[in-house]
Amino acid sequence: MSTQQTDRDRDDKALAGEYVLGLLEGEAKAAVERRIASDAGFAREVEGWRARFAAFDDATPPQAASDALWSKIEAGMPARAQSAASATPRLRFWDSVPALRASIYGFAALVMVLGVALGVAVQKAIQQPVMIAVLLDGNRAGAVVHTFADGRSVLLPLTAMHVPDGKALEVWTLPSRERGPVSVGLMNQARTLQLQLKDLPKPSTDQLFEITLEPATGSPIGRPTGPVLFKGNTALAL
Amino acid sequence: MTVQPSQDGAIEAQLAAAIARCAGGERSALRVIYDIEAGRMAGVARRMLRRQDLAEEAVQDTFMRVWRAARTFDPQKGAARSWIYAILRNCTLSILRDEGRFSPEEEKSEDAAPVTESALTLLPESNALRRCLEQLDEQPRSAVVLAYVHGLSHGELAGRLGVPLGTVKSWVRRSLVSLQECMG
Image (tube, rainbow over all chains, first blue to last red; front, side, top):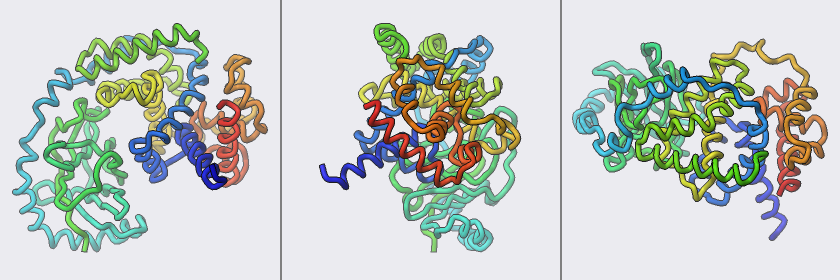
């Protein structure tokens, strides 16, 4: 093995360790998570670090785990088993995509106005987005999703969103009809959010994004269960 | 790791079977995991979050994610227990890193050295991690231990150890390389 390879190998091992320590944030963390999914050797390094540091967790004195805590967990579980739920994916909303697309074209002018209004936010994100989705509620714009050339996607809220106690806002996308909706983010209030698209192909044009109201820990079945607050499709940024 | 291998193996098998049953939608299987691990998980979350309410929230989040993600667990890629604790660590760190939830004056004061020492002495003297950590210089050792045991970020480590961010980052990386070589 060459010196260069040894160095790279060593860097990878340290990177995997930093990830397990929880020292990576933002894009660095997302990049490592993508790599775990695609690079079995690297995933083994991560697993190795988890095993090495597990001694600290094993040595930590346990606490009483109450029945009350279990009740809360149980209350958050879906009434029906998730396998049964996933056999009948919800199609009602996703079937309305053509109508939604038409409404998006109708709001092209709004997109341009928003483009100006969002100039500051765009600059903050350093790069120009290659795609933008405006998420609407009827004719009101609630948020935009910016997708950058490297596949990174950020949701920027444009309006306050009321989130009742015990609820959260969950962001979904539809990479393909076959795959169905995939959760890409969860937040307890409207805020700028890096979307977790690491296991998905890079967003394409006309890809649907939506925000639904879900239990605080997110939809228990991995599919939207609550009301759709805002939705919209990606379009190429000019 | 500190448990006898035979007991370790039995627990691992029970957890792996329970996760598989969760994937099939059996609610009672999640309770099996709860009965085996929730106490330890609450202890780990409390160690990092220092607040009982937040620790319980982390454990609750973890069980919801275990339930939802059970079908993605692949025993070829790692142990069941390790998978559960990785989820716990993610949930705990995301609460810890949620800036709105911790006031800046919380948990700043303690000296790094005694906190590191008391974490290390929890490990049995013969433990490989402990032996290898003890071979590191004091401050780099503190950086690694405080990051893992109490979930400190690079910035918090720099503040606690009174050195620039770049120094902390290079200490951590060098320490990880040494640890890896020492532990194999």
